[in-house]
Length: 112
Length: 119
Image (cartoon, rainbow over all chains, first blue to last red):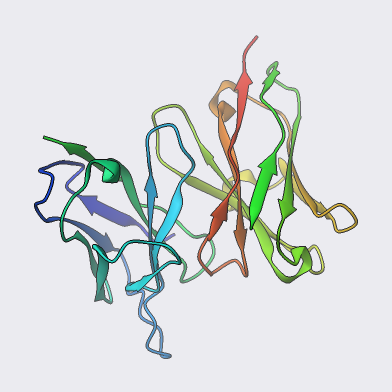
C-alpha cells in the first residue's frame, strides 16, 4: 500500500497569516494523463471530513480561494493564504491512485 | 442538495455483527459509488471499501476481507455496510462518502455512525 506522510503533525497558526503543510507519498501519484491523484480533506472538530482539494490542485465546490494545493509526483503542499478561525481542525491528504486509497496521519491546525 | 444520511449509533458485544445504512438524497444514486471510511477514537481515517451504485460491484480493503459486506438497494437509494465478528478494535465512527469510482475524490460525506463494541 502507498504510505502518505504528513508534516508537521501540529501547526499553530495566526489569524490573517499564511500556513502550509506537507504530504509526501511513498510512490509517485502522477499518472500519464498528467493528473496527480492526491486529495486534501479537512475534518473540523466534531464534524465529518470535507473535501477541499482534488487532483492535487483543484479546489472543490464552495471551497474558499485562500486554500490552494500544489505539488507533483511524491511531494505535495496545502497552503492557506490567510488563516481564519474557522480553519481549525485536522487536515488529511489521501491518495486516489490505486486501491486501497490511504490517508496520511493528519496535520492538526490550531489557532495561536 | 446532495446529502447522505446514516443510521444511528450502535452498541454491540464482541463477536456480533453490525449493519450501518447510508441513504442518498439529491443526486442520481446509481451514477455514483459509496465508500466506507472509519475512524477509531482519536485516530485517523481508514478506507474500508467501495461499492458501485450502478451494479453493486465492490472493492474491499484487504485487511477486512471476509468480515465486511457492502450492498446497495437502488429502490431506496441506500447503501449498507455489514461488519462481522466484531472486536473492541472495531469501535469507531463509520462514515459513508459518495465517490464516483474507487479512485475519485470523496466529495460528500455522511454524518457518521458511532459503533461501540463492548462486553
